[in-house]
Amino acid sequence: MVYEILKRLSDAHGVSGSEGSVFRIIRKELDGCVDEIREDPMGNLVAVKKGNDFSVMIAAHMDEIGVMVKFIDEKGFIRFITLGGWYLPSLYAQRIILHGSRGAVRGVIGGKPVHKMDEDDRKKPIRLDDMFIDVGATSRDEAVALGIEIGTPGTIDRECVELANGRITGKAFDNRVGAAMLIKVLKNVKSPLTLYGVFTVQEEVGLKGARTSAYALDPDCAIATDVTIPGDHPGIEPRDAAVEMGKGPVITIVDASGRGLIASRTINKWLLDAARARDLPVQVEVGTGGTTDASSIHLERGGIPSTTVSIPARYIHSPVEVVDLNDIEAGVQVLLEALKKKPKI
Image (cartoon, rainbow, N blue to C red; front, side, top):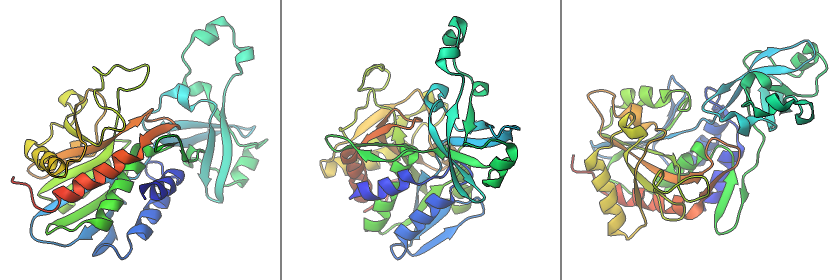
């Protein structure tokens, strides 16, 4: 089942630029299932299934949003920067793990107590400068002795758990969901094509690993597996996000109002035809928000026909993201069906 591998990936820690623990889980999971596994100079994991002279790149980013230590004061309190797109109120008052030179150090993100805020304080939006990390140290020397230094990365201390109706919640579903989907595809695919399963780094800070790997591999077409925002819960209107959880994977037509990816019509038809051939649930999306690795991939070389297959995920870029396991399984099946033959490019 996809839940077991997704839980391991979600519970692992790999902020942008420090994806090694996630890399090791994926490498172990794919050992013996592909023809070649390698790490490229950027840190991307490239898994190859050899086939004919038509190549497909499927990219899933390994990194998650997190923080990095920038200063330790004389009392041992830690100031930090964010890595990736945090909504700061969801970061405040969270438990966090700093991945220091001597191992994991648990702490909390603190700030001024509400009881000591005046009326003006309570009306102001929380700022990054208002927050700090408390690991229990009483001095800078104690924090350093724990293995914490300038540049130490940190991730949210949260565990993936099951909810009702086949739904689960955890951190880093953006994009451990896409990684889990790609692992299942590589393990089960039967395709005449050459497949490059690329688990990319540094997506959350600029789609960087996808760009370098796409240039190096020069595939004939590409698919990014990721998550997207559904409009099926309070606080968001369906007209602003028309896809829903539980109704299947989502194929991108346009994301970021066209500033990111305008997907290849040919690649989209290939995937949609595959879904319809198996009567698999599938949705399409014209998005106004974020983008994926496909946005950088499709601009490499002379242009690489690309699209994204996403899974609806509630509350992304928070510690409590929610997905439906049935959507992930359906996404795997759509890709397995499509990869039985090459698209007509």
